[in-house]
Image 1 (cartoon, rainbow, N blue to C red):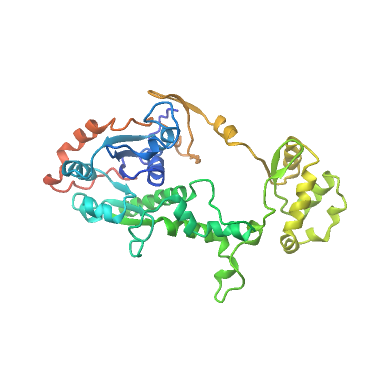
Image 2 (tube, rainbow, N blue to C red):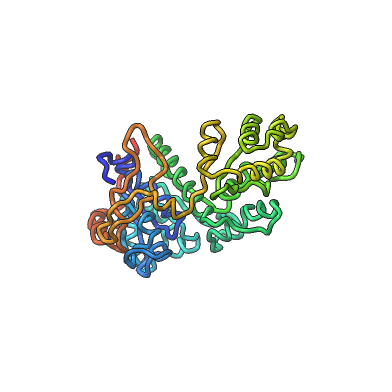
Length: 393
């Protein structure tokens, strides 16, 4: 998927001291947008390379996309020479992203103060499980435990079931997106003022805020005007619906939507039902209305309902399988792994060609010698590197 556009972050260098999904997702976005991302891997390997099967041992299905547009350097950060090389690289970059815990960063002497000693205007993003001023600041944190503490499991309890976790890495991925926008804001600030800064992103704060956007609800007011939780979203009938040959999700939102669905589904009596007369009434009776809609939808095929909903402007979607979604992805050629499916960035820009794969996922340590040769002239012993003009202008 080549492109003649270098991307809006061309000239920005990023040192990626993160692993698994959260940090690597953020740095993948930076790389897709044209940044030179240098990811440091432990000699023992990084988990994303083996999280799922892949065409070659070092390149899992996850790694083929998550590690694209990056250069890989292998360093033992516990070894003095490895740490020195990491600081050599840090002196040449604009951004450092890490999800190492505060205690680990301190022991490795790669904390914010250590990096600013070699690059004073660095944008240093430290993502971790919990705030640095909390008793849990150095506690291990993974998606499962962050989800558990964010309120998400309680939304399932409020639907009438047991507390459960969402079957996707929502904490890691939402935190990765938060890293991306926070770093871009800090780069813009540095462009305007010349001032770098430390950014702290606690995963628990990120996912709790994400959950409470709608679910703080009536409890936001002081005193509370009602319990937390957005009723329509917590309605247990809010589910994909069966059709004559599969599944669909139809959301009748207006009175006209309900009238059209009920008439088309052979229930004209429901088209005059008092429950659909006002928005307040539709919300109050959402559970029974959702059940009535689900019963009507069984009368026709998914394709027939999708055509009808498109024609009558009723919000609706098919319910594809994961296999169907993967099969619809574009393909690219990896020099080692062969053909693979590319997960595109979900943004489109009018002023340039947009995010592309310009560097396929590297093998572990593939660029170690190349990167160390580039930074050899800028060792910490030579003093801080002058601020570059490779910003986001």
